[in-house]
Every structure is written in structure tokens, then in C-alpha cells.
Length: 355
Image 1 (cartoon, helix red, strand yellow):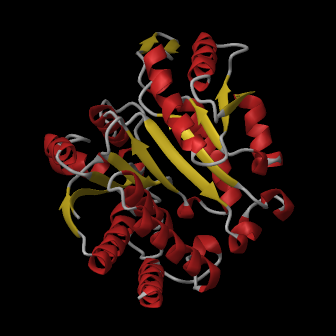
Image 2 (spheres, helix red, strand yellow):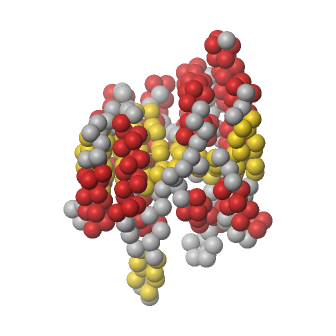
């Protein structure tokens, strides 16, 4: 296979972890006869500094002409003025809208070695294997915003079509797992949530092998911490999904190990670790690259259709988590390069064993 991958390191530790992911993709390509062409572009604060725009046209064009997009992180204190008209995060939101990636997938498994790093009791983490599907291009983040004197207004808006497409994607993913879907809303208060729930019921009825349970977002926040193993695929709107997935990250022990994929109606997707730009450790070589590396496994699976290679990479990461020295956020002393090298070594070892 030949594929073009746009690499957008972004800000803070973003360039460091995307470099690790590119190295791993290079090894995968070498082992399996694939040719990956990497096209580096700008976004966020670094793009503002160089171009005056958090999402330059060159980045949009490169992404639109790619098979997949690998992203690092966006933002930092240098650009954190809340009153600024242009902010780094605007580049990320605009990229999602431009590419039409409406479904954000965030898988979460708890590795046994990392269970002790979670604030939850180890017994509550047994069997946790979640997949969040967050609607990504609607809701309050994209609604009209207005400030009138001492009053501020953020519009939360959803259409039936927007809900239908993300729930269909969640149903398709659920039927490939256990067939259990949980839809999260606030239907006892919000009209958008009542539309969300009614639409979800209608869409799920089309999938005979999928069952749906509805949870209010406040109770779901509690249930994720008290019985997370009871859930499988969780679909929700943009704002709720943003909050719940960051809460759920505590189950895994560190934000640094969690990947994400943002998908649209086609195969083009944006793949990024869920962590932020971590400016306090940028440039020190100690950032955890595992979230970015696992994001490349999602890239291989969803955009390139390389399921075997994706599984091989995930197994290699599991091998590193089981026995290698890990980064500081996971209680170890290794740096970014050392963990990346350990993943590459696992890939080579597994390739030899399979030959």
C-alpha cells in the first residue's frame, strides 16, 4: 500500500510524540511492504507565530489530499489570553469542521500494570474496555456565541441528521463488539437532548443486534467511576463527550496512554493522543509517546484498512507496558526515545517470531 499522511505536530510536546508515531509507522511500512509519505504542516500556536493563522490554507489543502492526518497537540500558555480574537484551539475546531470528521472515537482499556496508577480501586478496573463515540462538530462548541454587557450566551444546537450519523457509527462499532450501546444525554432538562434521545431510539431500532441504554450525563459521570466495566460503547454529544472522556482517562492511569480517532463519512480521519500540549515538559524528551503511537494503530485500522498491522502494533505496545521501563507519568524513568525504541524492538521481535 502507498499512503500519504499529513503530520501536524502542533504545539508543546506535540512534535515530540508525533515524531515517535512517524518512526513506528515507518517500521510498520518497512516490515509489511507499505510506503508511507509524510507531509508536515502547521496548526495552533506554532501556526499563529509563523503565519498569523491557527489553521493555514496549506494545512487544509494538505489534509484534504491525504489518506490520514496525524496530529500532536494544540495550545499553550503563550497563547492563552481568553480575550484574544485568535486562539490556537480555533485551528483544531476549524480543521474538524473542514474535514467533516463528526465522530471522535476514544478507546480505553486498563492495562494490569497501570491499574495501580488509577485513583480507583483495582477491583473496579477489572474488565474495563470502553469505546467512547463523541459527536465532534455540533453542539455548544460550534453554536453562536454572544456577549451582551454582563450576559454571555453559548448556543447549543443539534439537527436530526447530525445525531443520526454519529449514532449510526456508534451502532456499527457496537455490533462489532458486544452489541451494547449506552447513549448519554440530559433529556430531563435540555431540548437538544430530547431530540438526541428520540433520534437515537429510532436509529438503534434499525440494528437488530444492538441494544441501547440511556443514561443522564450526571449519573454517567458517577457510574464511570463506580462500575466502568458495565459499559462497552458510549455515544454522546460534543460537550458531554469532552468532559466524560477526560474523566474516564483517570481509569487508565494516565492521559499519556490514550489514543483517539476523528472520523467522517469517508476513510480520511484525524488521529491524535487525547492529552494536551503539556508545555511544562516540552523539549525535555520525557513526554509519553504511547497515546500517539496507539493513535497510529487506529489510523492503520480506520483510514488504511490495515487491521493486521493495527493489531500487531497494539500487541507491541502491550508488550512494552508489560515489561519495559516507562515514562515518568507511569512511574518510570524512561524518556520519549527510550519508549519509542522499546515499541520498535517489540515490533521487530514479533515480526521475527511470525516469520
